[in-house]
Length: 156
Image (cartoon, helix red, strand yellow):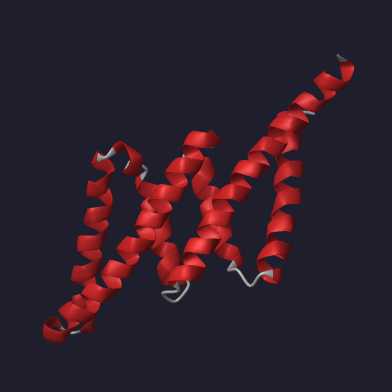
């Protein structure tokens, strides 16, 4: 099967499975798609999976810290400025952590942080959706590999 078609078939099948799975188990569907995107942006394969899991998780932690810092800073600077200071420090931290190779995928951290904010600060919902999404990304990539090699194996 041609690569373009294999990507479409694998992604379509596993996206449908993920949507059903996430709704059945009350996971946050869009969070999985964020991590799925992060997986492919990180280069895919085992390395992309590891990088996605670690940096997405770090981003959720940064989001949590930003929320706590906002509360602290708002008490003396007002809500808007307090949030601005907290986000500035958190964003800088997400960039600075990339000096460590295993935290080097900056977009992964921002995706994790954005997920935490988008879920209304739902820590467990963010983490579980990000883990499953990264795994579904990995599985869909394996599906592409299988589909592109299937015809050749059948003919051999």
